[in-house]
Length: 392
Image (cartoon, rainbow, N blue to C red; front, side, top):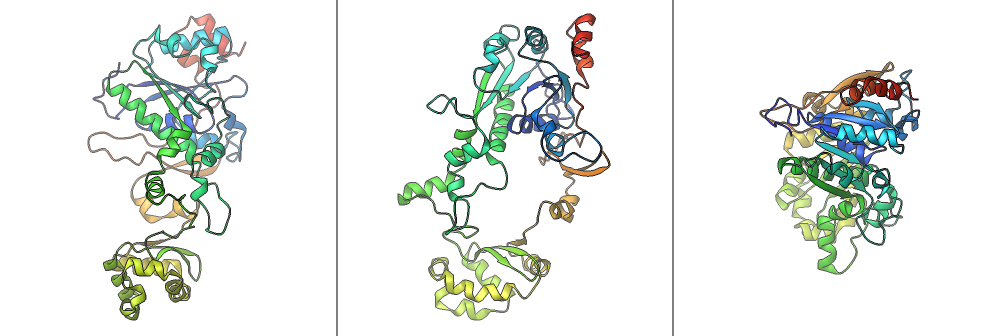
């Protein structure tokens, strides 16, 4: 197994990545950035489904979807549903530390490369399966992010109070499962390996309800949809400015008084309707009637300058283009400026800052089967490697 005393936290760890789409590749991408060697197993001729989904990056032949989740991995073309492909994977598993898969439950077992099969050749292998649901009535339900968000409660609390439930703009069901997979894998490695881990999207996303669930238990009522409004704080929402939206998060009475001073509205402090957080929530409509026209008088950047100068919690709402031009994100060193197919591709890298080790910067995504010979030559005879390399 792995010696953890290395330059990158997971340097020396070998991960076999039998995943596609989002949840699994997100997990293995993070493992790569933490230092692991990630060998991505892809179906010959087609590869990861995301190779054919979404916009292509310039003339690279690579989609933005695939590039976002598979940088730095080594691609090996193997058909795991065949005896030859399964046998090659078994040979790779003999010396690997981790295997991650997100096929429908039972698929890997049917191919003869389930946990018990591979445990027989490597008892210290950490075998991680990402699924939609643990054992129960929903076990075999197709687990797309939309499905688990609907069942998991997150859609019910997302959206405006008078609007329908909405899917959050980020695929949090997939990402939640990917994050829990990494936590489970690293924990199992620390414990010495030799475990099967199952990480569900649904149960994982339910665990993210945290305070929302707590409030439900306390009141006996479902947590409401409130848009950007907070149920027990005010002002706590977005306001439209002269050129965009600005988020304000006043979390205490002291901050409220400092906010009123900053906007030259000491009269609001003296107003009994707004004296405490409870009062401000009770008279939320009156408070917003005072603040909405005020925020429209300045730009989002002008408000941000004022809030930063006074130490107040608030920020402009950045879109997915402007955030990558943000000076703080640039200054924090968490972006890797890649160029793929003539397109600038500033990728956010692992944001964990270690004092004694380092994470990996950006790497390009692999072409399909690019590393088949390189990887398989270490475990197979030359004639077998040649057959896989040519796709025969």
